[in-house]
Image (tube, rainbow, N blue to C red; front, side, top):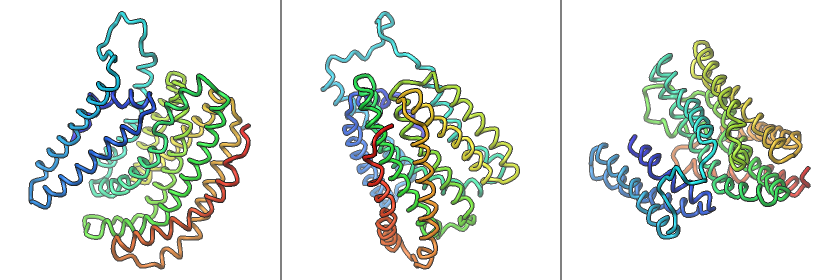
Length: 362
């Protein structure tokens, strides 16, 4: 399982960085889609044929490794003059490398520490419960982050050529993203309980019905992912060094509060610590991107945040009772419920987007 991450770090990362900078994320998405489909098909066949989990994981790793060959072939064909060897005498050099690495390491510390702390201070049952919810909300996070793929390169180019147009485009992108985020987490809040009931139906090792954890995960997810537009513009502007102290402070708040709160509230304390640190960092990112990069008013995006949060809360409060009265016996029932919920939940956020999308930038 670790081999996939090792291959990704040492071989795939540089190719993805090059293609992203050249605004060719569709190549990355295409190769990823092919590898995922191939992985699903091969693993399904091996599992049905009775092969061991080691054989299945080995096959999955080999399929992931094959991505490297596709990246390498495309890059060598389309960037024939690319010098892939480091030359210390070359006048160009990468700046803020260690600052960017610091951001990566603080993120690794924040997002990897919860299960470790729960396993050390609580129990493996608590870790299992936390892992199930983290798996669901991690997938939602990846779906939202996919909306920002390619935007970093686009904003990076426009910041150096047309700052005024960048402000205009960022405001529209932020409004669209926040409305989409509101719709996603409204659906999540309404559909999470029936999904957990189905997903853990045959799991008898622990009680996976944890309403408090679900609510906290929902709050943490909303606050954390609301920073994605601001984070995209900060990375596009290359402000790694200027924002490094804030990243270190976020990690410090998160770990310190986690160690204190886990003794009092258990797994809920871990999420409460994340909520506090994310609330600080997301607000700070929005402030920095507006004031120091785009020269925009900080109040309007902040008001949009509050409007989206209130709309989510109201929509979930109204829809909770009707959703709870619908019986869900299998995944087909849940998919039908999801389609109906998604269509209804889209109405308030679509109306809100129509009101604000073309408003002037200030």
